[in-house]
Image 1 (cartoon, rainbow, N blue to C red):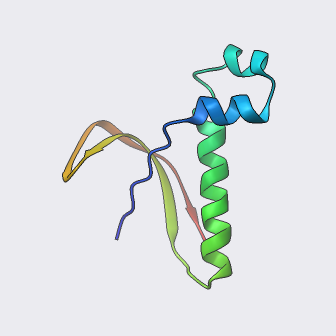
Image 2 (image 1 turned 90 degrees about the vertical axis):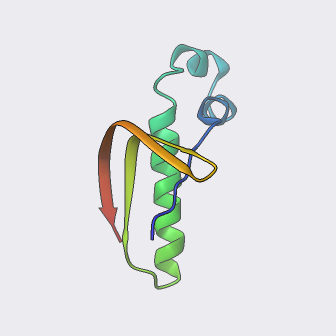
Image 3 (image 1 turned 30 degrees about the vertical axis):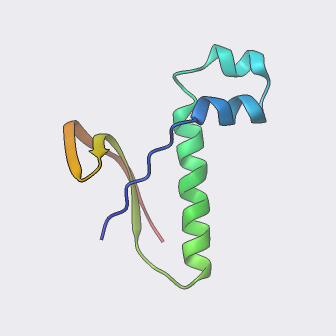
Length: 81
């Protein structure tokens, strides 16, 4: 089974948790720290329920309704828990 999670407001999350000046300075770098934190929290929650598995951060996959497309698809990293 696979689950697709797309974070669409990473800049807002960074802006709300740091200074506005810093968030405006780094709009293209905001996504990764937010993704990393979400993945870590998912792993923590699933592990606490006794679930074991892997979670991967992937790049360039697009899901629209029931259609999945990819261009230069890459697995950024995988964490086992």
